[in-house]
Picture 1 (spheres, rainbow, N blue to C red):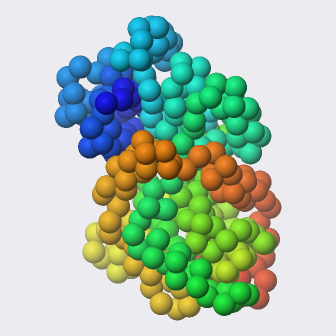
Picture 2: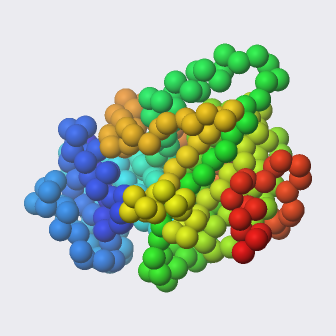
Length: 319
């Protein structure tokens, strides 16, 4: 049984990590979050040392490190705001723990290079939660694509709209310096998935970008991808709004819908099992997506060429 600490216990994704720690037979011994609305912890253990100040959490983790292998923290799970991932990974390595970090692992490519040096120096590992790579339907699609003839390319339309209210833009998520913007905050999962299935980026374009939405085009080894990402509920299709739904996720391949909306419940637990068995995804696995979202958010939008524009882009230009 391994000891886990959790940074960002009050966040949306933290309960999936708590569940994964419990379901893999391990124990959560410490947690930290500036917000104290973390009663969810009691669903997993009544013995979690909780801190609202990172400095006190740091001191506690260091104290446990000096009490031997049974007491020390073996893994630090990181669910904090994107811009803090780098610092919290450094804490994990410094106390002799491995880090398990949500996406994006870091915001900038050079942050990754610095962490790789620390990984070598400490002998510890940094793992990234790339849960879409363990989704059965996505694994099956990847195997199918790998069997296609060399030089052939699929035509993909990727659309992801997830409604967010005013709070989103007041929080760190609405600050590009802290979240990386729409392409990073909600898109990095899908860009990693696309490259994992269809190969590396050969060309990319950005056709529209503001604080609420972003659209563009990717040319991959085995796919041409028109993509659209949004946190604006006004972009939801009429039938989705009529059904009182707040999220729309669609991936069409050569005109046919690829269904992967189900099966997300236990993906974090699967990722944790892989990590604990020494097969988790490390920093180099995350590099391609980090490089891409960095380039996209620093691109100046241009007019789309030919049929490169996502269908939703035309709607935006008419507004």
